[in-house]
Length: 265
Image 1: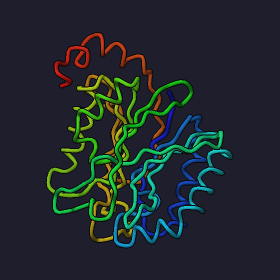
Image 2 (image 1 turned 180 degrees about the vertical axis):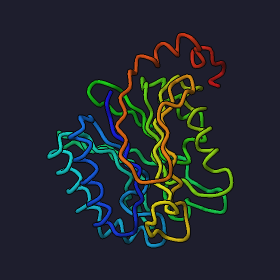
Image 3 (image 1 turned 45 degrees about the vertical axis):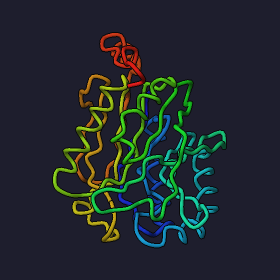
Image 4 (image 1 turned 135 degrees about the vertical axis):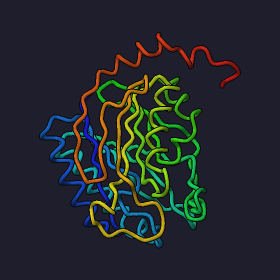
């Protein structure tokens, strides 16, 4: 399974973000990737006015992403927002070359470290597994990575790879927590974990809103036994990853944590 991780910084300019998505998606297609993953909040960085941004831009954004997937011939997986009553829905949207679109709505909202995502975002309810080239792949967003049961459920639904798109908040030991959590979710779900975050604006120099989680970089891929296969720094970068997902089956035989679980734990 060959795919691309696009560690970027988004801003509050939807048009600028869209151009960056186009550039990276075409580069990934040339490199032979079957799909490309962009971070949470790629449509617009977290900050004030998300509902107005979503209301004004959702239709043109979705049309452009559908055209991009068709033209490039690869699946584009990207963080975006949709309107919901007086809030927004935080989505990881999947645009296929067939023209089909699916989405995962973030279940666990980031009400932590002094930030309260639930003030402006409506929570999702249902885990989502998608099919790309016959392979089941689980979807998750940022704060979800702290909840092992979600990843166990994705694995039980057939996923051997889970994609975590994030806009991780900076702070003391936050990079360390991100890396530990990605490896832990791989270990306790018998899956590969591709954890992709927004780049670190302190490194890239991209102007982002001062409040809210806007990225720390350090995206990584962990195998099902917790070995880090890919590790990035804080800069913007396109990383091509090629995995043999059969290793997840071997890990499940060696350490059958889900098969051995009792009472659903």
